[in-house]
Image (tube, rainbow, N blue to C red):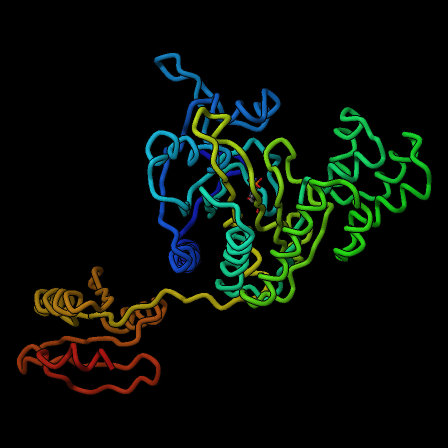
Amino acid sequence: MYQIPRGTRDFIPEEMLKRRFLQQRMEAVFRRFGYGEIQTPTFESLELFTAKSGASILDELYNFSDKGGRELALRPELTAPVIRCYIERLQMAPKPLKLFYFGNCFRYDRPQKGRYREFWQAGCELIGTDTPEAQAELVALAYSILKGIGLQHIVLNIGNLHVIHALFAKLRISDAVKKDLLPFIDKSQYEDLFSALRANDISQADTEAFLEILQTPDLDKIQAYVRGHEKAESELARLRDIMELLQTSFGIPDARVKIGIVRGLDYYKGLVFEIEAPVLGAEKQLCGGGDYELVGLFGGTPVAQAGFAIGFDRALLALETERFTFPSPSLDAFVIPVTETAIGTALTVAQQLRSQGLTVDLDLLRRGIGKSLKYASTQQSRYAVIIGPKELEGGTVTLRNMKDGIQSSCAIADLTAALFV
Ligand code: AMP
């Protein structure tokens, strides 16, 4: 017996129905915000992913050499591929460029609930603008997608990496020590961070103040803390603008400032944001994004870039955990030829209804009326269309409402109209 590879999943029809439903809802919101879809290959040059992150990312990658000796990798994310495509084909396009994608990603992660080796991301890149309104719109888009699919409880945190740098500069913490401390911030392990700062001779008072700034949503407090650090001050002013726009123009009252968002420092620059679904527990992060710089690194003409990626599988898990009601599979009609002589007519009737846009199946097992009706109800069919010798003779069918069992005779010519009610 062959088994599915670890960390991957099959999706059977009832699962695909949910996934497609969700995908379509997400795509509709991207389009409403003026984004156009982009698709890139499933594998890329390995270098595309090691250029920014270095060899350390190899542990997480599915990489291989092909028969021509090329070093390739299954994509672990879609930002680098989209930027590669932008440089190859879209640099001259009018700005800003709004690109969205939906695709599978591969990471050699340790599989658990909400963490897979093949998973899907829905995300976007905004290229050519970094005005506060552009960045606010980007954050609002991520939030609107997750609200738009029906999630009730999500938490949106927004930070800025320049401010984090200013915090470290204020305590005169070296880059080497900073590197060791960042994972604690990333995982909100504040007790460990406290001990590590104290072990690096930071006073108790300074350590406590630092920890408070990482966690407080109060922009005034943060501003007072970084006063004198020019870049941090201007970035905080931008963050204030973004928060204001989110609240007043986008009607998002619950965005929260959290300076202690790190999100892979080698990637992002200023704005960073995360959206979580607390119902998911350990793997609760649904979306991460911010502004970053890859175009210059990949040899293009430097330009403002920002984007986010939503973990599609986790968004679905969160909806299921919140007991969202997904559409269930259903048929408009199930056609039942009662005798062999009715099979030809049954096929014709099914075809006629399908050509009118109705979803129709029919008995292909010659299993008789009782079993066929049972099957039709397992398929959630609204109607059964029964055709026996009597019906054949009169050019009619018997139409059975599967909900209440009420039957009536209907001329074949009137059937489409009867089913459209
Ligand atoms: P990242 O590209 O790491 O910022 O991830 C963006 C989003 O993708 C995360 O917030 C998660 O929701 C989702 N994600 C990342 N890794 C996995 C994984 N191994 N399995 C499922 N979802 C993931």
